[in-house]
Image (cartoon, rainbow, N blue to C red; front, top):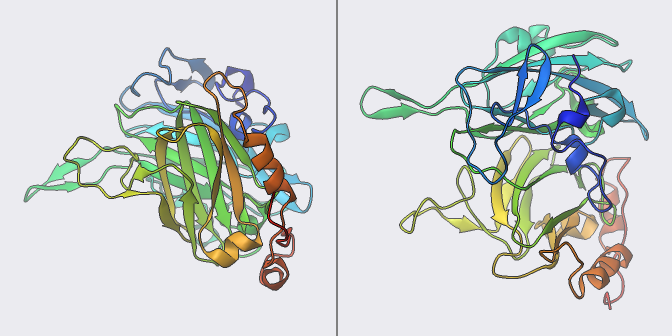
Length: 361
């Protein structure tokens, strides 16, 4: 059964400047959204409360793989809401996610997860005969587990983390065409007690594009000053990247938060994001720096010059535009990148490129 988008907290149509987050975000975690017998129910947990979940809950959702304009493809909770990236999928350690994948295309494709537990028939790889033929509907079951103690004072890790999912069957047995064309999305496994965000953004560095776009058409993500913002960063393609977020920093651990004044975790604002990698973190929008138009980009200079950059707009706490922000956005939309012509030869054929000129004033 397809979840009713109106029952999802982030399923409303995107607002200007938020091209995909609300429509794509699926809070499929028990205690936030519980799916029982195919029906969606919204529980009382809010984004200001710690996450809670019942033991061993099974959530059932339907995802559609859809052909999009420009010879691209996307995943969606309905055929009309497929996007690049696909919906954010969430669960808690110990829960199971049953996904009914409906292939509405004329291509072989699948859905393959990272970080969770699954049997070979839910692998999403042709190697295990796990895929959807053109027009086929197929069920995939993903499980998760909590950290467990073992002998010798050792602990086996649980499933909690910022993971991702993607096609593994289009074009080649490794799904190369599906990845290039946009069949990917974020998968979050939370630990009980984790802090929930106010906003969620998925950023995918896919070859020399961000979410299959290049600047100035890359997503502009928006939040108000003081909101808790969760970023999920994912790497695909054939290039090595680094993810940098201007004016904000996070602890390089599972959540992005320090656990106390003596926590030795390294604090970063730039991190490697390479093919198949994923990580996530939360920051407080504008903390210690204030509102404004802040850049996120790949810090490999030739990549940012080619268009791997976007804007994180932190509005005032009341949602109004801070001084200078619109001017900065206009400069971003108008400036050009000098490395575009040189890099175009190595970019995917569908990539848009542009060249640098002027001072931006």
